[in-house]
Image 1 (cartoon, helix red, strand yellow):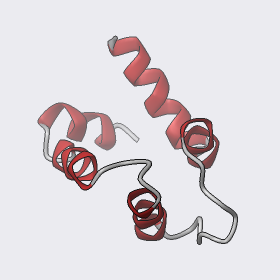
Image 2 (tube, rainbow, N blue to C red):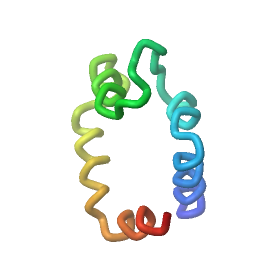
Image 3 (cartoon, one colour):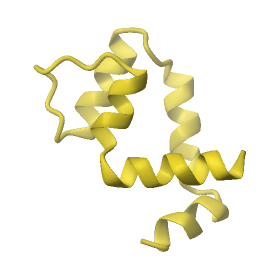
Image 4 (cartoon, one colour):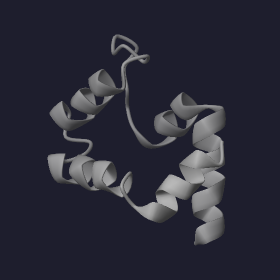
Length: 72
């Protein structure tokens, strides 16, 4: 599992839209340079719940996640 997480993290850093496009349907009329617009579209279209977004946002505060982010 940790290897999958690291691989996903590397893929997200290299090409975030490719990773998102593999999992979610994001139309071209959504501003792909605006993370909030993407998140709002995913919530509005029912592809993710507000609870899932909240959980992902809370993960940012996890010390292990912070270490990964800081290793840029």
